Image 1 (tube, rainbow, N blue to C red):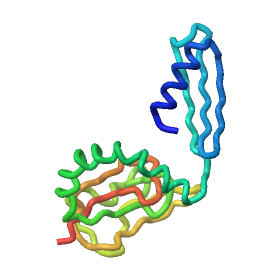
Image 2 (cartoon, one colour):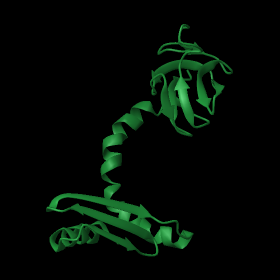
Image 3 (cartoon, rainbow, N blue to C red):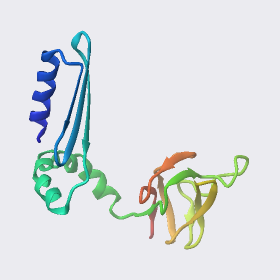
Length: 162
């Protein structure tokens, strides 16, 4: 089901006067809720169901038209940062740039680090994990704020190895 079909379904439900419609297919689950007044407010939930590998390959071309726009905007920044090495988060949790609130930050922009230096801590399930640098160099950019949530493999710092 493509975006046009979903938009047409939303319009149809809004015109019909129904307040809630649920549609489940093999690979997608859609719930459309409208207010009593009709199309004044419409809430749509689209949930992709887990599917087998061949189905994912079949759906890949549908997402392709949106892809060319993103690389065009990101390309200049990627070229600019390509000479730097990224330190990424090895776990999910909350990143802290200081060992405790009253201490200074581990690293700042311009700090020189060596392999094995602690660059931050990530709290996961009440455990504080020290994140050590795997490279030596100079911190060029800090990509995450203090006390903010981070995902696995999320970029944290850019390092100039030269």
